[in-house]
Length: 112
Image 1 (cartoon, rainbow, N blue to C red):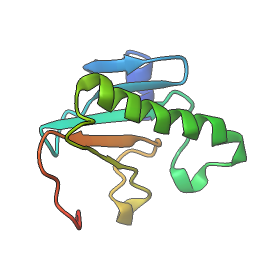
Image 2: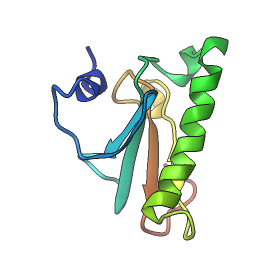
Image 3: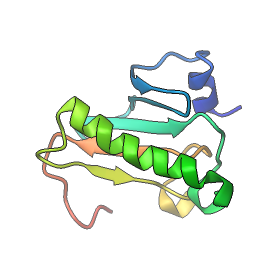
Image 4: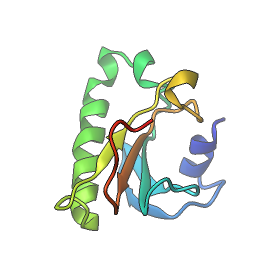
């Protein structure tokens, strides 16, 4: 069971910002910006490269929700960044698909 599955199951506490039947959003415990939220699907999809056509509705839901959460939390007007890490070279730390929402400061490009 991954760290994120334990958070979904409430075995590990998290500062939850949003939840519905398909996903959960919470504050990252090691923020890389003043605002760093993680949006995870409740269905255990390992990574974006391993998703399938069966995940299309879920993936669309995640993208719509991350924008909605940014608006709800007041970050949309100044801007925010959404990141999906995939695999070890992509910076993936937990093998459970998750979207990072970063905001609260001017973000640099390229990111790393």
